[in-house]
Length: 237
Ligand code: MG
Image 1 (tube, rainbow, N blue to C red):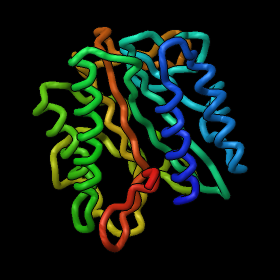
Image 2 (spheres, rainbow, N blue to C red):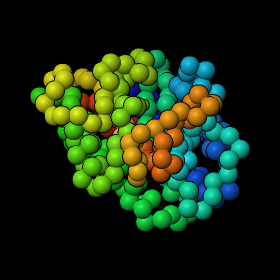
Image 3 (cartoon, helix red, strand yellow):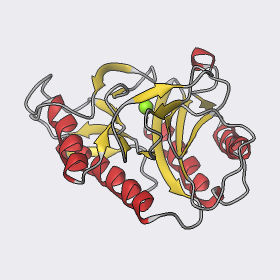
Image 4 (tube, rainbow, N blue to C red):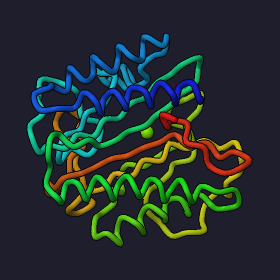
């Protein structure tokens, strides 16, 4: 899983270098797939429930599961890119939101709060804590910054399958659910909206957008709980 995570991290780093005004989301997909295959790994999203691409690209009010295509990124856009990799039978899964050129102060704040909410979740993933302590850490941070956390899509366990038990909601009361023990691996993935938390799915059956058209950001890491605390497997370092 470390190996899968490193490849995911490399792809996301390259996505950060590649995101710029004028590039299409299909071009980003091509770059990502090339890196994944160069490691003799497979893009885990490609063909998953018939998803047609190797990464998800979700622009502005798109929350998750956007399909790469001919859309060209414009100055001031934000784009969330989600990457899943399978290698030697194990998975890594991570996402990040990038600014295209210079973005509004609101958009940058959304990106920053979402990224930090993931850090808060990782810090809560400690032996002896309960699963919902992770969920609560995200919700508390996001809502204390007057943003809203998406309810209908959640993080997940990950390993030999990309999506395993347990589900990892980004909201909820603390102190509930299973006690966390070393060995558990979770894909934690807050999705945060500027407006309301409600979302809907477009006619393409994939793209999830905010119901009110407000901007949305998404960060994700695959995190293992080790004997000395959480280890981010999809970290570049
Ligand atoms: Mg995921």
